[in-house]
Amino acid sequence: THFGYRQVPVGEKAARVREVFDSVASRYDLMNDLMSLGIHRLWKRHAIELAGVRRGQQVLDLASGTGDLADRFAGIVGPDGLVVMSDINAAMLGEGRERMLDRGRVGNLQYSLINAEKIPFGEDRFDCVTISFGLRNVTDKQAALNEMFRVLRPGGKALILEFSHPLTKPLSKAYDVYSFSVLPTLGKLIVNDSGSYRYLAESIRMHPDQETLRSMMETAGFERCEYFNHTGGIVAIHRGYKL
Ligand code: SAM
Image 1 (cartoon, helix red, strand yellow):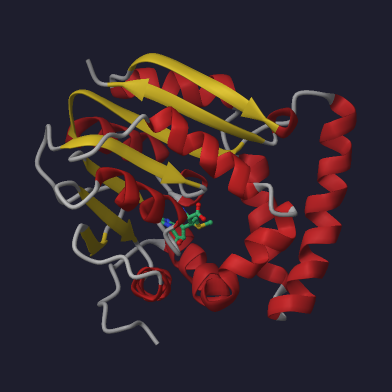
Image 2 (tube, helix red, strand yellow; image 1 turned 135 degrees about the horizontal axis):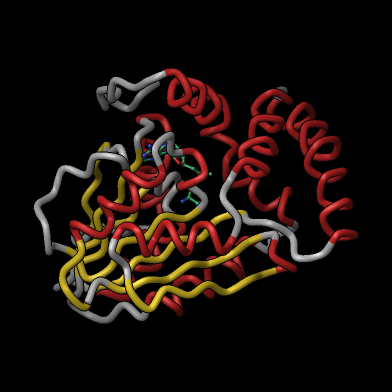
């Protein structure tokens, strides 16, 4: 089911990404907790802190999936603020919307099917734009960063939470074993789909490392770009300002 959302037309890599998330949508939260041993909650908490969002502000969360960040932001901005929760995938956005309704989150949340490469908002609109474990899946990452920059108001900031590159050789080795054998096995057991989790491991390996992503943000126009490594660089949070 696509919860009544019309799918956005996309290219080949994007179609593969859609297949992956269509297949995991309903078990997405469970898999997140299992695969990261619950640690993704800490990474997300830190991302929220770094976003420094305040009451009354407007936040755009891209690739929201089931909406962990959007949920927290909706609590912070309060009734006078707004959080746009968005995803390119109708099944994921539908799952997310149901989660929000279950949690009783109504009033300051909007749901929107959005491809991060082409954001359907005018410029200088949001106080904060976030993308958590989503940029990796976007075909044209530079386009997404440019778009994030465009829709931010001057003084606004972007936060990118994403898998990155382990900082040491031994950790990198252990991580490869985990991602290329443990993960697909978990995927097979839990959602009967090892392919999707193999895709996950591959997309992580292909993703730009910390410094590369930082310079891509600078290319998009962001200033004061910095990143925070977590869990030995397995995850990094990048932050940049539109000044
Ligand atoms: N933000 C959530 C979190 O941190 O748990 C969900 C992340 S989930 C791993 C990645 C999401 O990115 C999926 O829901 C997928 O549909 C979405 N996605 C993939 N390509 C996208 C694109 N080009 N634009 C927007 N969302 C995209």
